[in-house]
Image (cartoon, rainbow over all chains, first blue to last red; front, side):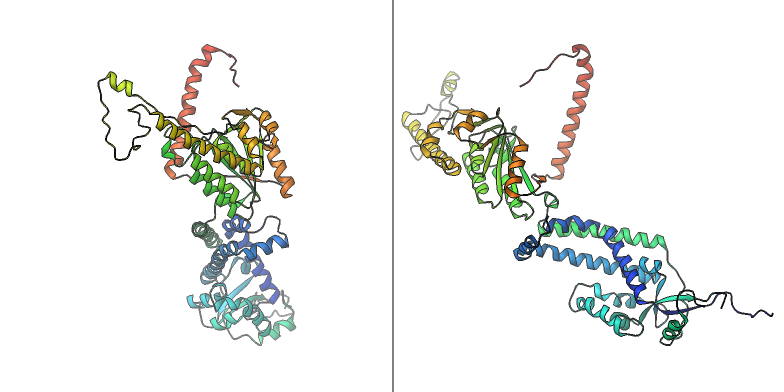
Length: 169
Length: 329
């Protein structure tokens, strides 16, 4: 039988599956929690009640002073998250989580520009109105056919995965 | 056959995809690790900055029982006593307030090893102890007399060792007088004062009986106040305190009989009392005055020099002395 002259490996891109994106994000969060947020752990645990009881937590929240000292920590952590995603995505179009899940960020234009990397991670900027994106972004993923977040639509970027054809095609 | 995705799903997704190039993987682990370390460093920096502005201290990072030492002479400032161990009221009050602000701290232990000192500084500390909302326990070690006992009396519970020395409720004032010495060296003290008692207590002249009476009256008044404060703090009859407030010090066991302390024991008894009262598992964290860079440096070098000296000394003398018993109480 005559062999068809097909390329040995054919690839094409498709929007990343939602579960893969969630897993990639969780991996990134774990990395951030266990490595980047190490300096914050002692600080936060010192501000939270030792016995974690509801009454103690309520007392702490109503006392005010301790809560206010957590706000700058929360802001600093979000900014570090922003930097993590921005620096990795800008340079390599992938975070560690995306790398492990084989996902990529592609731009609708040509190369992923600095402004695009910035805009797609605006949800981590702890300032109004960007902080609203923390809620709007995941919800918008459910309503777009390509599972794009609102900030992805604004930045004209998409998260894709590469699919390969087997030789048995 | 597709390797990762069903053909049906793939084709439905593909319809939404614009034509584009296959992204070229350019992931570098080296860069990713660099970013992680950079962010961790930035995290440390931001925690340091936040700590500076939100008054968070190392002590607050762990523990639920604060331990504050009152060691040496109680004074208003360190400059009052150059070569003595001093606990200044300013430092102690600062530590008490810091522990009081920390919601994790449930109780404060005052580790007292002091013969007392300035009545003003003692009263300041005693008032700070009374002001706290936490459970306070005074743990008298070797000595907790006079002003130090005043501080102890203001806490909720006093624990002292059977062999410790406490009490000595009374007031002492002393002065040097050397007009005879001046006379011997043919030096004359010329008194020029505007105000009859302006040079009261001057060492260059003998104190008159009137001046002595004035001093004594002041001391009596101060003692009276001391006694009333101890009686109030200990919930005792003022007459009973007055009877034992003759300046005499008592052993821990005697002090227990007299009601000057609540319990005989050590740190274990202190911890047990706090755990029972607060229903917690006590984790003690030491609250100390923050030291400056040069203070830490001089402390370290002083310790090192001491141990080097001690080592050299023992190398020379221990060999000659052999193992003679060293008895201390």
